[in-house]
Image (cartoon, rainbow, N blue to C red):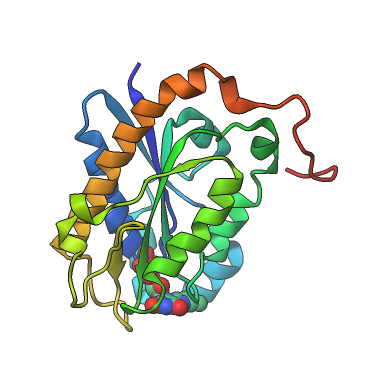
Length: 228
Ligand SMILES: Cc1cc2nc3c(=O)[nH]c(=O)nc-3n(C[C@H](O)[C@H](O)[C@H](O)COP(=O)(O)O)c2cc1C
């Protein structure tokens, strides 16, 4: 059975989409790995607010063929890479909304001991490259996932003092204040490295999960009734 890697991303203007393709490429390069690329659904309020922006419309058209991520995609995966552009140093509402529907999966421990990693995009170098990944990690830790970063030793391209995205916490790109900057090769390299490291970690963790199916505890804590 191949190791299954899900690359789930949200992108308004295409930068995280481009990085997601590189993460998927890196995962696909590992032997016996199957990759799914999925979009985290747009929120209707956001679509309405941005639909007059030409770059938004073009970027959404370019990713229209990519299926939307579902909870079944999360179940299917042995490992999940999340593409999360920054909003004020934190995750966008689209990603929060998607994660906030996972109460039922959390209760059953369905994501426990799956490998996970995060890649990001910010307008500027100090706009949240690290904080977006660190703050997005918190719910993933609640869900029991095991974090895979992009350490300096394996990613010498992030050992820089100039304006390039990426950190030991995960790959990143810089969109620029007007969104005109596109991911550069060093950023795409780190993204591919995350994909390949995540695929290997996902394969290595499979025996752990097989010995403890879904990690479900008999006295699993409950959110109040009606939790998704
Ligand atoms: C509401 C909002 C808040 C943002 N906050 C930040 C921020 O705090 N720091 C930053 O560098 N960029 C910020 N940005 C810019 C986005 O991060 C940027 O558009 C995004 O990384 C581009 O990725 P995408 O093309 O995949 O959507 C913000 C954008 C929006 C719409």
